[in-house]
Image 1 (cartoon, rainbow, N blue to C red):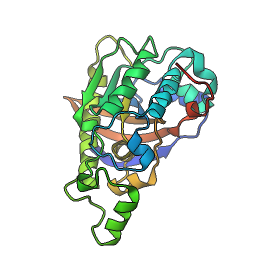
Image 2 (cartoon, rainbow, N blue to C red):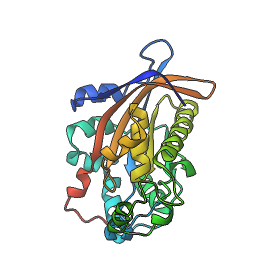
Image 3 (cartoon, one colour):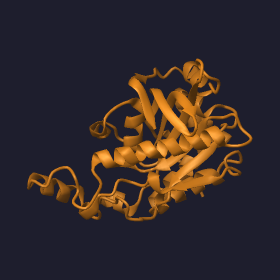
Length: 270
């Protein structure tokens, strides 16, 4: 994955008609330029989320609350729940079945369970293969995994620094997500039977924020500027060149960030 010069970071206005037109664009904007759209989904809540513990790459399953969140999320991808979507996200999901070329998930169980529930909620997602990727795992937090946020603040105050002992640096997770994006775009370009370049990505807070930053041309440190809640939806659009399984990003746009209107629904789903 490479970049062609300085990337342009553009945050689109939430105009439904404009976003719908952008998401629907599968043809080159100029000679050789392609457009890919990724809908990023953070996993449902776990008991460690509720307790404020750092999970990292510990394989923690969803809690009962997390499973309820995911069932509500699943209805976002069925026609029955279009009414709760804000106009901007509604334009991304569309009133017709969403034309998704591929689905990708971290191989940690809290992400794969989220993916399976969403996939099972939508007839047009059901037949699609779900690609399980270790590259999409959460940042490895080393000795901080299992500790509370307060304990980590104390460790930092004692001079440990921002890198967890035995874990990944921000630059390392940033590079890993760059590689993940390369793999996902290649799948979107080579998926048989569809012209769509839209992908669903199920992952984690820190690693998805790193993916957003790379796509927008930001640095690894900028991942701290974003917040992604459990089962939230974020939509990014990437323009660039593809050839010989090599991706060159020219422009990244943020269409929707941390949208979770489904969690406001009082409906208890069974």
